[in-house]
Length: 160
Image (tube, rainbow, N blue to C red; front, top):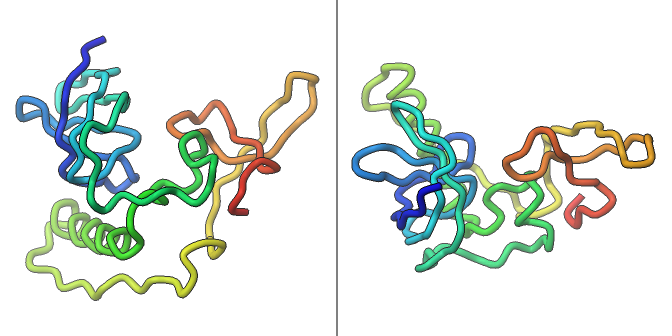
């Protein structure tokens, strides 16, 4: 697999980091705009690449420590390492981008995203999956970051 250095420039609608490599879009499971990272290209499609973050070389000034100790492996809280007011800005930007790029609308005016009074413990939507355990039982949890065939057991999740 090819290792590259990338400058993350944006966040995609699904929470992935976005960079460019020789004019081609690269999607990463994690990373923040403004960061210089070392990554490994894991999949190459005609219009984009997928990559796995190996190392943050230069962190974003908007990066914060995630409150949950399971943040790196759990896929439940994608932007917990991004300043909250920046999360709100990117959510607004994504709505605008969808309406303009996908919807074909021009000069869309979107109000600012309304934040929660609480940054944690306020979720109104979560996607759970059942999974079989090694002993033949079942467990309920969130998907591991970037993997839909593996789950993160809820009894170990700090923020629920």
